[in-house]
Amino acid sequence: MAEDISLVVRNGTVVDGTGAAPYEADVALAGDRIVEIGKVSARGREEIDARGKLVTPGFVDIHTHYDGQAVWDSHLAPSAWHGVTTAVMGNCGVGFAPCKPGDREKLVELMEGVEDIPAPVMHEGLNWQWESFGEYLTALESNPRDIDIGALLPHAAVRVFVMGERAIRHEAATAEDIAQMRAITADAVRQGAFGFSTSRTISHKSLKGDYTPTLRAHEDELTGIALGMADAGAGFLEIVSDWNAPDAATEFGLLRRVIEASGRTAVFSLTQRHDRTTTWKELLGLADNAIRDGVSIRPVVAPRPIGILLGLEGSQNPFSGTPSYKSIAGKPLAERVAIMRDPEFRRQLLSEDPVAGSTFPLIHRIGYAHMFRFGNPPCYEPKREDSIVAIAEREGRTAPEVAYDMLLEDEGRGFIYSPLVNYASYDMTTPETMLADRNTIMGLGDGGAHVGFILDAGFPTWMFSYWGRERGRFEVSEIVRRLTSDPAGAAGLNDRGVIALGKKADLNVIDYDRVSFGQPYVTFDLPAGGRRLLQKAHGYDATIASGVVTYRNGEATGALPGRLVRGQRAG
Image (cartoon, rainbow, N blue to C red):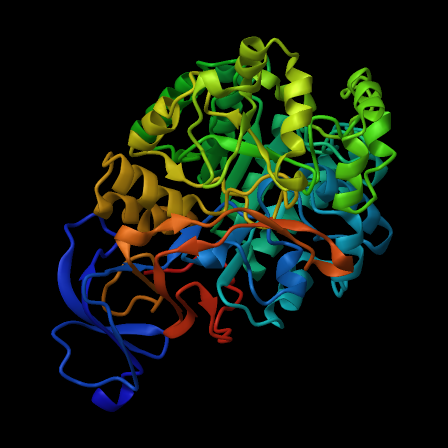
């Protein structure tokens, strides 16, 4: 065995992903498998001294949107910087396959509106070497990466593929349509899809303002699709909904009937909306009841508010929809700042309606009462008295005036932080309660999406730095379980997520006392010079994927052992 050992991580504190207490041990890897745990006498071809450090499984993120980036990029930042070694994409019903050549623009427009990935980026980055979902997976397979990826079959793409313009017009699917969707789903799962995703929220629109084609899909359509997964004998359903048709219990009842009919499992996004502050509690209870009844429906929750970063360098700011700002939006940052400092321009812009001309789908869900100076270091737990409304009241100014001046700070490079959900009470009570429920799955970081105004792919780092070290609310063993075996099990990835003999050799070596965030910044490294927000992490001494060190102290080694994972994996 000794000559087969490629890497030994020595003297570390092993947190194995099961929730069990940490223990001191060496971990030996051979190829892409864990082959020995304990006191390893043999030397590896490579060794890492992890004394005083945590050794964890690689993190598994089941809610990402790398559907486009995985085609053109081998480095799936920012998730890979935060310890993620496996990501499942294709969530929220949007993606790029199946797709007929004539429908490509429809899917690009939808992805641009729903996930804030600019159309020029996708037009340049996507090579469209596919039509079916299986062909899309084959295209993904040809590109090596720093992490493993898996994909869900997106409902919007399937609906447009089968129904064309009728899908865009939200017409009801016919029995023939449903039969075809069922067959496509079964084939996609057999080809390697992890399941199926759909969206039923009015927040998901194309850039033109059209609602996602899946918004009004009837129960018979969803059941038929779920039965396609049953035909293939694998797969889970991922759903995002507003839960108001006409109430949460009615909508949840639809989901439960679909899952009961198909015998599959489901996950759904659970957040606290600021205009409906208690609905999430009802949904949490309904999901817990379903689990007790043997129906696997699990909420996916965020460990902090999902926050929008509004700034002159991002894709959105409070005044993006005004005619005055639109007139300068394409100018370099320094020039925009100079123009905005002109008193006459300021007066004119502040007299204009920022909502009427906005293409931002979430514009109606943000307000100055939940906007704050983000600061450096970043503040994710701002106080009510630090809101723009509170500052305006103290200083005798209007909230738009405060926001306008705040945008110009640091030569226009600062951000306004606007918690969109989970912050109605101006504290972390809601995400804390959600995380405390054992049925919830930590997620919703949306890696690969919202590249110009949301930066939450660092949720794993937040779990350690805030809920572990700062607050002491959750033990390290529980935090690691929530990042590893729990999401892996929910996705059917039972070959990873724990440090055990024979499991996949995906590991993190973490300096717990140093785990923290860098300052968010803007870079223009997407295809066609597209911009995105990024944020580095500190405290990750090494990340290992498939037995190969991919990152050391946050820097890529150049190794690309990540592969496409086709479908669920047995333990």
